[in-house]
Amino acid sequence: MVLQIDQFMCREDNFGVLIHDPKSGETALIDAPEERPILAAIERTGWKPTMILTTHHHQDHVEANLALKERFGLKIFGPKDSKIPGIDVELSEGSKFEFAGQPAEIIETPGHTADHICYYLPKSHVAFVADTLFAMGCGRLLEKPASVMFQSLKKLVALPAATTLYCGHEYTLANARFALTIDPTNSALKERAAKVEKLRADGKPTLPTTLAEELATNPFIRWHDPAIRKNLGMENATDAEVFAEIRKRKDNF
Ligand SMILES: [Zn+2]
Image (cartoon, rainbow, N blue to C red; front, side, top):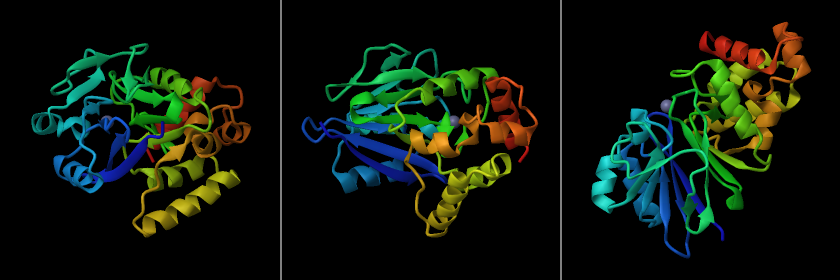
């Protein structure tokens, strides 16, 4: 079964994503950042949403939950023990969950928020990682410390490298500029940063990405890299310490 996926902008820099199974008509919205652009995407694609898959409780990911639930009678899935508006089904790591008959895995990734979950569809080689991992970046640590986010990111980097990653925000340009300060001799990063400058100058999105591309260019998951460690003066630090230092530097960038 081939899923169809449509990504569109909401608010300032949020992504909305619709995933659609043409056979069953089942359609999921990954987060609900803003009603108007979501309705426009539904109109444009003709895909009527049957569910919302919520990643975390932030307002810019759940704002349209109740309005869309009322309009479409859809079901809202999301993390357990949270405050997701209109939630019907609470999910946690290991929850049995399917989208259009294909298995969907819930990966708990606390860090940005305590409740953050990612959705991974192994048969479609796609994961929705919202505000945990970004192109050349990672989410801000608002509710959990770096040691917790490090463990969450380790789960994501263990996915197959060919996995396509959909992220919550278009932060790629700022992330690329920061990444170059951490990993200035990485030629894959330099090439990617140039590509991103061009895409953004043309007003085009830089996502989705792939895990392979992030493994090659994203300093937040390249804690093992000798050149980065040398640049930071952290040759003998643990992976978690290297990650924490990079996150701290980004906060002050
Ligand atoms: Zn968030």
